[in-house]
Amino acid sequence: MNKKNSNNKFIKGLAVALLLPLAFFIYYQVKVQRSVSKKIISLPAYYGVDTVINGDTVYQKVDDLTLTNQLGQLVSLNKDLKGKIVVVNFFFTTCPTVCPKLTNNMTLLQKAFRKDPKRESSLQNTVHLVSITVDPAKDSFQALRTYADGYHVNHDNWWFMTGDRNAIYNYARHELKVVMAPTTGGAEDFIHTQKVVVLDTARHIRGYYDGLNEKEMKKCADDIVLLTLEKRPKK
Image 1 (cartoon, one colour):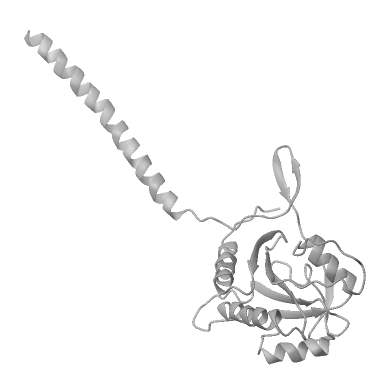
Image 2 (cartoon, rainbow, N blue to C red):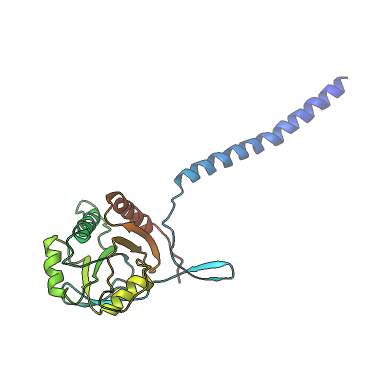
């Protein structure tokens, strides 16, 4: 009887010895997973599927656009702004309704990323704003300079751009897809959109925002910060 009790005690002790570490392991795993899940950052989504290769989605990369900025410089969005996050909107200087508020909200975005002398690093050199006129016939680079100065913009990281009308409209419609209506090709064909588009450093579209909505512009700013944390595979 004593021998049987002794065996039972031995078996119970062995079971506890085996199960206790397992219980601690399970508890640790659950605790860590919950902790990690709370810290997981949801990065802005990709827009514009280009193709699917072997089950992997390949997203569209926006083609380059070369125009003249408000300083009279011929500049390329992809080459001259390589490695930067680009925020694009469309406007025209004589617009009396949507554009003033849109531009004003863009100035808030610029202020959000202005250089802070109290910080060792700044996002000012990481983010570049681009406002493209949809009325290039009237909006010369001199007119754009006057318009930009009226909003006290920083010309170093915010370009107002003009140039070939067909190139601009193709970029808006087929590259950024901010207007879905088909082109007529005539003088009456006019793009007027309040959308703001964020392009990552690889020129994928990572967000569309209502430029007239301050809450959406705040989200735009938040998403830009998240994109600066994104790690890209080394090529």
